[in-house]
Image (tube, rainbow, N blue to C red):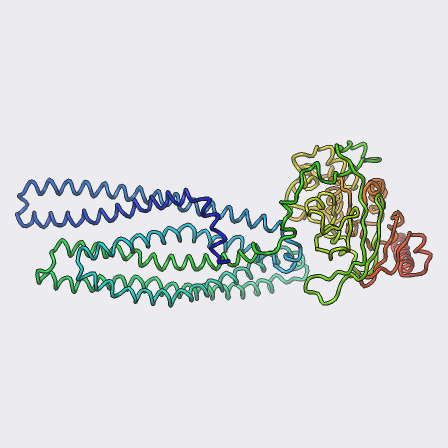
Length: 620
């Protein structure tokens, strides 16, 4: 696919604005050409008046009429300029808006591996710098191109009609223009590609340093990071200067060639005038028409530069837009709400009941089973699988806890159930169905996911908890979810409580508060499957016990996949699966595994010793 095919649909969608813009541009150019004719007639009348000493009243009257006509042509020329600016530039901004929306929607449909290999700053650069270059191509670029084509199509015939002898000198210069354009075309494209790539590197550095500002300050690396950023700025400056040098030679060279044509005509045309082979009015008209070609020569270089830059930016944007989506046919396979597996209404208990019961659903179905069958999985590009031959089954209304050393594959299992990564076909089953056969939107609506690293948006507490349907969820439901996640007390201490604005990534909350906010968000979905990916790592043991005590009745109303490193908290799990190096080494209940003397029993003894040590330290 050529880069321009991507925007064909957008151009067709806004063809009305472009048509009106072209019409206004043609009115402008025709008015300018007609004004050139009128100017030569005015000069001819003035020459005649000088010849008769200004005594011919008929000539003076015609001169006055011509001046009025010239003024009217200039007014029409100005009105046309206003029109094409409005239509062309507005259309380009609308297409840029549509492209931004297309890019934003595409990012939402891309799988996680894409974001793992693509820096956020690079994506931001493509959505800002590259989209601006595309907008310039579709606005000023198209405008200048149409204007240049019109003048190059209309003015040369007028030159030939005015004076065939003089026009031959102009036509002899066209091959020179072609050679110059071809020479600089590739150089502009390569320089612009380097500039855009460098701007992406710069955006990545800014984004990483902003997101990691705590690490930078903690290690006192402010000055070192500034020096590194200064070096990147120098590289960016050098590449931009290299691009400007090419453009600084290209555009003036085209103008110089056009002006040299005027010098040739002044010399050769003057000889023809003195020989009586051309009249004064014809010579002046020819020079005026030739002057009209100076702008197209300048515009030609400008248009080529804009289209080269836009093509490079379109290729960079297409690299994202051509990425494989999570599920190509998800929109076609998506079913209306009544055909989806209905979300079971989780009913409140204890303190949560006092906070107000959540709404219920009219189509309630029980939670579904989860089964892993000989699952072997490797991340894209990895040499070794992170999971090998995992076979585990979990019935509905059950809690399955995954424990094991860091890197044993616990979180990967949770991600595969939600299809954040695509599992091999025939290895992961939900409700007896292969997850690869379940439409992605249907699956995601049945899953509540609490990630290991909680993420909150720069919005109110309420909007973050009610993220999946902020307008349709009653406030009482939000309060219930906050109570269930042991988060309500902290919210009530905030100045504006549930309307309190949070900073970027919830920076004005502690790590434990952010985790509990994400738990409340997942509970409010009323999922059939609830995935807890080590989501209580940032709270103390006492708070964890309170949360689990409150959550346990709610978890039993779902099918819960629980990833944790705190084995002592897994007493309430129906099944505990111990992973090591991507393999299931033990599974069973807490009591069975604790008495077995295996890896789980060792983890229990170690954490009990650590817990006693912490208690002893607190007593001291």
